[in-house]
Length: 212
Image (cartoon, rainbow, N blue to C red; front, side, top):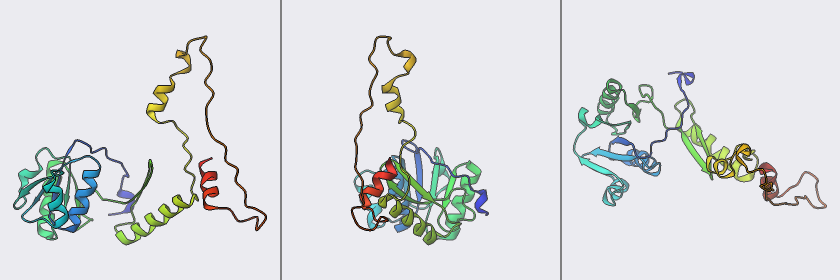
């Protein structure tokens, strides 16, 4: 599979049925990500690791105790298979392809129809890194970008209003003729390097400039 075969896409999975096949640590990480995104998760496995057992115990996921069956894919939007048994993961991938369900295969990313990138989030910014099937490389890049965001080295200034802000502001054509013009509010920050080296600046100053 070539990196150019990938079509980067963010999925809004909240409220949609998803399936995780496997009960180990990898399946637990994938399940936690789906739960955080608001997905309705069913886990199929004969046994669960501690993390998955905790999610099942508090009702965050539905656990079906037993081996995978093709019927488990009915009504599913996305499936993650991470059993650690290549033959089982391959069967899940094959069934998913036949059912036109996107499948992440932890055993063999080459046959998967979907990949999970290394993700870093800062406020409303999400960075997803895919590195040609090399997880450690992807995580290293993700961490480097996250550090640059924390340090203010990357431009994070918003160029487009959020949808709810735009709707609240209203369209200028719909404003009453005698309505006073709104003056945008904001803040002023004075950023200086002091009397020392002109190349020096505080981390906060750099972050403020990135947002400006």
